[in-house]
Image (cartoon, one colour):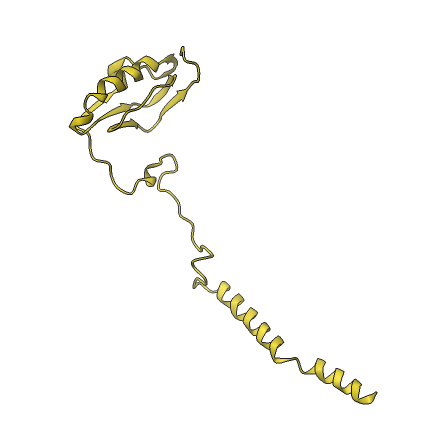
Length: 145
């Protein structure tokens, strides 16, 4: 009975090597996480990426698009950016007209600052629809708009 008691007391007083190794590993990992050096950079991001201007989506493009030879404004096709006037036909006329320049490097339609109410219209290849800062196109499912 006495020998069993001393064996239990000695095992508690002297922890096993596996427990010591586990404790050392945990402390080592925690000390790396507290330091300024990144640990496991592939799995734990240490910095956040922030866009230059949260209003634009230009950061999605890795290269600058080639400049278009033909650049026109929606106002040249009768568009009004007051948020009340329907611009569906103006957008359709503009896209139809600028579609003819696809073989010559394409064209760009600029939409100035304002609120442009429009129904649906189809875009074409080799065509850039450029919204200036402050320009908003409000789309509607109504075909008659």
